[in-house]
Image 1: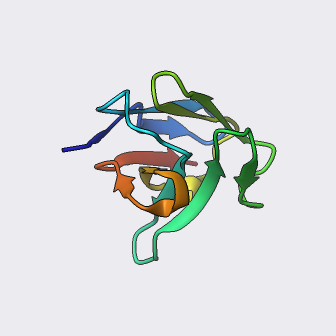
Image 2 (image 1 turned 60 degrees about the vertical axis):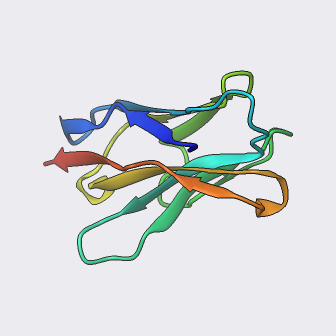
Image 3 (image 1 turned 180 degrees about the horizontal axis):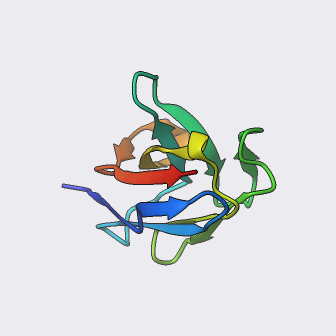
Length: 117
């Protein structure tokens, strides 16, 4: 069973930084899209940043200039560097991965990020 293992959440003050990591449990699976979603209390889960193996990246306007995605395709790993965090970034962050053509999609267990002012 394929799993996405996340790490790196926590609590920081506004203006601080955190780095999230996510690794697919099976390194030999053909993953194309990887990225991060987040869900704040009382809100729907929303995408934050997505990328594919060709290097194409889509990033939400709310985090542009502050969040950076990186990948290690050989390890099927994705990272999210979050700088200048704001209280509105507080949410549970979910790692996402998909095979080509979205034939299979996978989600991490979620990691809490709390930013206090």
